[in-house]
Length: 278
Image (cartoon, rainbow, N blue to C red; front, side, top):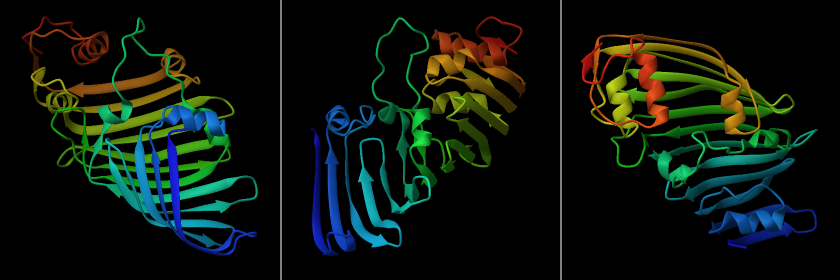
């Protein structure tokens, strides 16, 4: 099935699954094989290896000193899995020196769709509760210069998801603050984002598009709402406000894909020609 788990240690009460003191190791090479075995949506899981220590605690289990390593990131930390009145709750506190977003998302595939019809895991919010704190020292896209730290604090409870705040340090002293909520019952999403003094040229360079814009910093505030269980459905239903205050800048002559052209139209409402001061 493309997965392997090894355990080494003691279980003093195996029938009750109590008195557990185990070192564990795990590896995954094919998410689709594990999905077929468990019946759970694990097709999109990237290959990874993991190790740590597993013990039992009241109403659940604790995993400490764990490391999960993949090509996208190496994450270390600790957590618990506790049985609640309605469902299990997982709590994780972990950190990683770097997150490679492009590697995590996988290679792009050719498609006739500008927006891929990628399913969103909103139904999973009704399966388990969670309290997650993650800290990535830096974030990078392919070979582009890395951005600063990414801080994620997220809670799942009774089918409701809330990630706030998510903080991404674009450059020293310049942070994007993002709040995201989701409701599994209504398949609804909200996003709130704001940033002050963000250099758009540097931001696009971090995203793998260097030399597109040069100029002053920008302030932005975005409030969006939508519904859907796929990325295409969500983006097709978005409604809200986006306010961007842009200082003088220059857009240089270059070829862009459809998504990038939307960004350029947003920051250049006069539809100025390329290589033009705005």
